[in-house]
Length: 311
Image 1 (cartoon, rainbow, N blue to C red):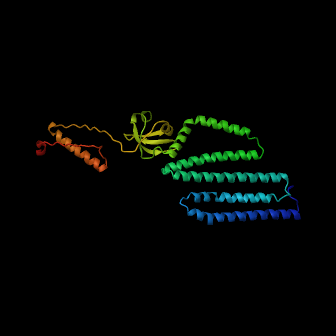
Image 2: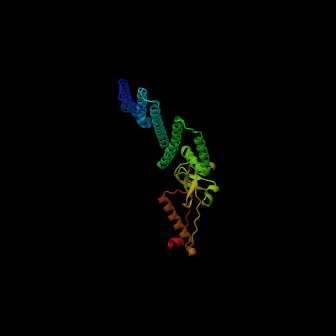
Image 3: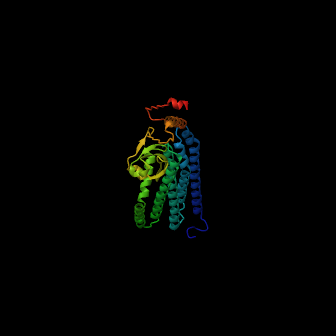
């Protein structure tokens, strides 16, 4: 208790009251600022066409309030001249940690809201939105935590050069070990942003990508690391996104024409023509029910002999 003069002198009492008054006044100012944001700024933002500004204001509301209060605590701490240097250094260190923490929360919320709004306006499916937002949030968390730890250690006078070198070497080792994974992740983000194709599109790919499953397929799902494509025969292929960005992808805008050859056998050769007619009519009826259109120009000739009609 060497930091305090005991019993309290008049000067100590006045400094404590002054410090408390400063903190209370600043807290009231912070509260008024948040009420102003809620009742005035948010109402004005609600009149705009986009909800982006509303989300930004809601995200920064609480961190701004805490930052103002921390500024008031720091101003009140400056009034306590009777504290020893040890106590002042300790309390200022705690305030610095609080400032760093609240600043990181503020930046994290801003980035998260910006990314969420940006991905929502890309008109992609919800699964991609969720994956991209989650991925960006984790990256931002990792970066902010690393920066916060380095700033706090540096503030307390600890040597961070070794830590920074260790983090750099570790990051390089992880990047080399997960090179393919990172390439796929980056390629997935580029596909989501650039949108060379989307879910439901029919794309044509080189043989090196599709292999024995044909040259084209329908995009079923686009993920951050891989894309699922349904081949001609219905097989679902999981293709790494890096292959899709490195290879030439042809997006089929119009419907794809398929040349179909159907072979069947008839026991009685005399019924061949009638069998062809029945099979052709059945195929046309099935195509019409399924909404499948034949390639144009189309010409269907049905030959029925008098013997077939009599039979």
